[in-house]
Image 1 (cartoon, rainbow, N blue to C red):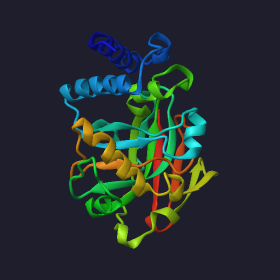
Image 2: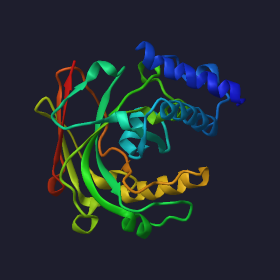
Image 3: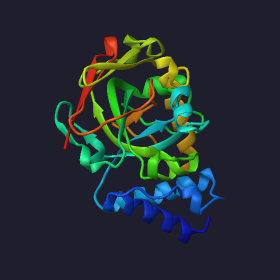
Image 4: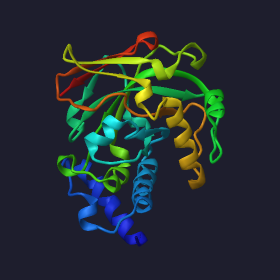
Length: 261
C-alpha cells in the first residue's frame, strides 16, 4: 500500500471519532490490504495522537482468546497502543458519549518494572520484567460501522482500543497462577459471563511474550511502567450510559467501571 493511501485511511479513521460517526470497513475500499498495511495505518494514527500531546502508556493484545476470535470472526491475535487519555479511574463516571460502539471485557493487566525487547523474549524474561498485575476492564470500541471488521480493519483501528480501568490491588506474579485465575463479570448487577486466565493463549503470560516478540522487530520496546493488556477472559459485552460493570478475579481483587452520559 502506498504511503499516501496509508495516510488517507488513517485520516478517515481519525475523522470517525472527530465526527462521532463510524466509517465503512477499510477492507471495502482497500481489498488488497495486508496485516502489514493495517499496522502502518495504526502507526500513522499513533503518530498523530502523540503529536497532539498524548503519551504512549502501554499496549494491548486483542483477540487472544477463542471466545473473542469467534465473536469477531478472526483467527489470530493483534495488538494496539494504549494512550494516556484512555485511562479512567474506578468508580468515576466514564463519558460513554465519547465512544461510538463501546463494549467491555475483563483482563489481567501487567505493569512492567523492566524493559522487554523482542525478538527472543521467553516466558522467564516476561515474568522477570513484570512488577505486578492488577485486575482491569478494557473498553473496546470500533470506528467501523456495526463492528463489521476483518483482521485488517481492527488492526488499522488500533486493535479497537477505547479505554482502560485498572483495579488498585497489585499482586506479584509469584503469588498467583494466572492460568487458574477465575473471573466473574457482572453488568448492572447481573452475572453475564465467567472465564479464566487460561483462556488467554493458555496463560496471559504467553500473550505478553507474543506481544514483545511481535513488536520488537518493528523497533517497539515494552518500557518500564507500561501497562500491558493481554486479552479478554470472556467475550465482550455492549455498554451504555448508566451501566455499572464489575469484574471479580478472586485473589487478584475486583475492578469496577461506571458509565456516565
